[in-house]
Image 1 (cartoon, rainbow, N blue to C red):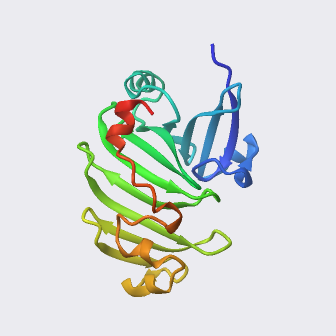
Image 2: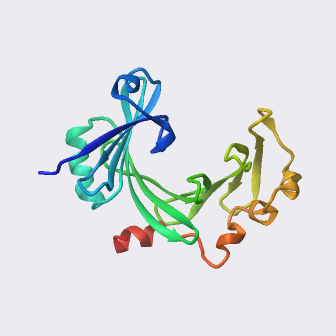
Length: 208
């Protein structure tokens, strides 16, 4: 029988700066409950909204086996299975998202930098085709400044200034630190130009 060590966090995700006590946890509108194995590896995350589990993320395991177990423990709650791949100096997080009943929803592939900031997220369909891309730009302190949305062909369709709370002109990318990254959806940061966006279909087929 597995022995888990649990930790509680403010918001959705594991962030050491956002760790809270169990007493604080129950008072939060959005929170995460993390389960670690005896070796300290994260096994799953339960995301809560207003005290109820809204989604569960499993960090390892076969999606089919997880679906069967998940349906017994979390009735009516959607879930995802995550794989992590190296993208030196960053990392890819590849998720297979499922409905509460275990049916396929979509794939999500995120690029995360050394600070833990998500730089881009790609949504994929069941055949592995890119449906949309979202990119994020941060200041040196790690605070988000802009978000950019792209269609499946990589064309920008929306730009948003997080600080002002208003839409931004598309050509704002010219003034950013890495403008080429934001010009089209499929472009990668200059640190990762030697790599490519992983195929989620292949990742889960190979059990990576």
